[in-house]
Image (tube, rainbow, N blue to C red; front, side, top):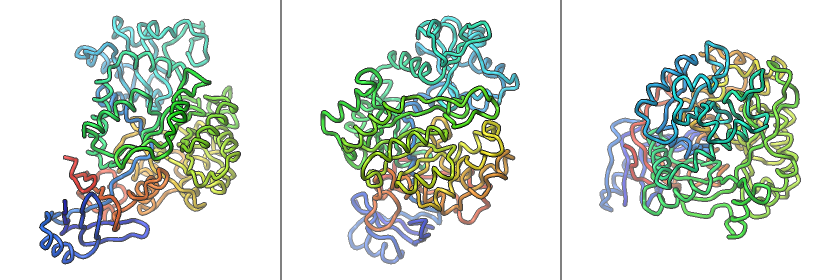
Length: 527
């Protein structure tokens, strides 16, 4: 199929910033980006379709390098608790949702105790006041903690588990709040009740939603066996609307938590296995938790809770072993590290490998990263996937670190200046999938929201060109997908049509840009 797109403002690339009059697309790729007359003549000669853009703006499709596609699909089908300002409001929303919920479990996501006027975490007794007969699990915005009602605690057998991640009150009674591995155990129990059809629906819904947000490719991190099976089925049925790059969880049950990695090695699956739509890239590993739950692993105690520095989610020995095995198997590793102590451990594991730069192994988040660590990441050639919207959502992060360490929060400009290849992601459903919210956050860094650490980190603000480059070329680069990096000749024709030109509006208006149409391989997939 041949199609020409004319009469619009078309940004073919961002660095360098290149604007063209028209695009010519054939067989899913851009074969010409340039003058309108050339495109019109080619379409007339070869009998293709001419699309009049009506003066609208075209950009390369956004590439979100870090998404939990299954969790996003679940979130789209559950109770939205983002922005809830009190436990009373949470209970009210839960009660209304429970009246119409037909599933075995009642699920919700997005609460943040930092916003609650009660100034405390919710408990199982709060939830029991609303729902007693069905299990309830409400996940915190960071997806590293949740609150369960008593019925859910019973079903997950967490009431009698002796673990620091099962939070207890002053009398030693579990409150219903679970973190990290206890949270993971609860989710596994929940997932055991889901069917293959459930997973297919979650992922198909999430992909469709991504297309509506102008996201044409995602890095699906922490993908498990059930989600991979659903992805394969959707791909085979022609129901996967966007491109997906998969980072599998290594596994939990056998061989020190490696059953998925062992299967990939046994089958000889290496990075890039698949096609332009669906590819397996490697494995995702968790080293620590989140700043919100104070489980991110810091070198020094939290300023607002000196009794803890967070803690690791995996031993250094097991991390090094998994990283080495994945590296030698030809797989890319994506390693979650939010605290600076976690990043020290990640760097220690990666620098023992050969040809790290060629493999583009990734650090996910790098939220609290010291200057010496930035230098080491640059020297080793490690890629980084960052989530700029954390800046706004984690408005309290300055309290966690104190004045001296604030400069280590989300130092995007410093990393770029050191030549680090950086891709943008959202960690959705942790953060909004809407790319314009992310671009806005990267450019403004909370300036208009009164974020406490804005002044201390203002120099880390990115230009619009830098932010868009990271969201396209950067994300493509860290996933070995340079064919998706821009709209120059020979690249895959993934692009979006939007209602405003981001280069002609005030920075405060960036978050208000709307997606009008989304194309993958030159074919419109939304609306």
